[in-house]
Amino acid sequence: MQNVKRSILTSILFTTILFFFNGKLLAQKDSEEVRLNIQLRPRVEFRNGLFTPILESQKPATFISQRSRIGFTYKKNNKLSIGLSAQVATVWGNDAQVQTTANDISLYEAWAQLYFNPYWTIKVGRQIFSYDDERILGALDWNNAARKHDAALLGFEKSKFKVNLAVAFNQNSERITGTFYDNALSQPYKSIQFLWIKDQFTNAFSASAIVLNIDTQNRIDSSISHLQTIGGNLYYKKEKLNLMGTYYYQTGSNPVKNSVAIKTNAWLASAKAGYHFNKEFGILIGTDFLSGNNMNSSSHKFFNFNPLYGTHHKFYGFMDYFYGPSGHKNTGLWDSYVNLNLNSFDDFNWRIDLHHFESAGTLVDFSGNKASSSLGNEVDLTFNYAILKDVKMSGGYSQMFTSTSMKYVKNILPQQTMKPVQNWIWLSINFNPQILLLQIKN
Image 1 (cartoon, helix red, strand yellow):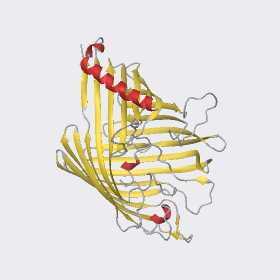
Image 2 (cartoon, rainbow, N blue to C red):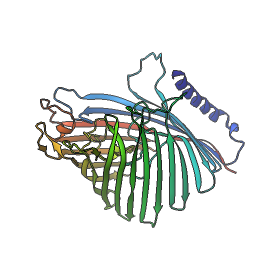
Image 3 (cartoon, helix red, strand yellow):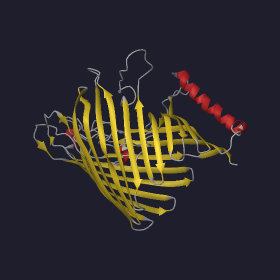
Image 4 (cartoon, rainbow, N blue to C red):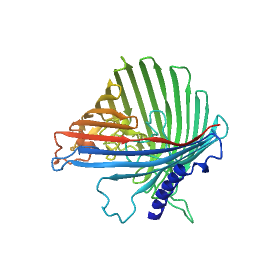
């Protein structure tokens, strides 16, 4: 594994040297372009209740993490595109000063896209799935490791009509016999297929739809569970007004109870409206409802909607209490929010998000009695400042005001006490230049 990681880094550095000092290697064809993409993104965080409430007996965490990424894109005559990038996601200080082992270098993107004609393309390899507002399929760029898929994608685009068809089949390693796949070790699914369609009907109105199937393999009997997600979005944007409606329905089966698949019947509905009063100030109000299970239910059906591989950090509060690493007992969520956006200067803007959270499923307290559905409120304050064209600073302060019911969905014991202040502070600088190494046009 270490030799593979060293080979990846060596190949990228060697290719860089070739592009800088021997452009004739690619100068044999017309209409070629090679770009180098670099990203260094250090981020300092103070975590005093991120993901889940911090207890009186616990101390806050402080650290600096960093994403370091280098990649190339190659385009030829509008007939071929190739993307290759590698990254290292680290925490400052986690490597020895005298390094004796390889860093954790991973291959983030490695894809080739072939253009059959002006309308049809096929893209194969490791790639990003980012669709619509990233609620179901997203890049998860906030996370230093980000999200990627190994897949083949067939695309059609004509005028304002787009269609994507994607398929993937995963294995943990090369095999001699069998195809059992343990999703706990690698990608979270054995196979995936989806069809996505979007059409811009008018300058103001557009719509998208997706049909997605995910296959996972059960550990107990090796059977395959099939989970289907069907739904889409409606968009309306005209002048200062911006409206969006979303609905998804999930059916099929989910291996969520002792690795045995159970019937799923879940849904998500969202609506939001935004209005820009002027260039400097805008407001957005919205509500998201994700169905969930009742804590005291003995039903053999699963009612919790799974937002799958979206960028959840964008939607349900920046502190990621509900669809982050800790979860909330599959009780669903009703999130009502208001966003205020202010552009003070051309290169500086800030935003305030106010969230009110309630459980979609019935909650019970430690005595087994029905509890309040209110989980708490969150305030997120963030800013962005463009220092240079390719250098941007961003930061934020978030605070969660938890209710008593938060203890019931976060596995906090009756005798444990949450701290009165649950907050999170972060500051990041993103260095992200894109360098044109070679361009030939005749």
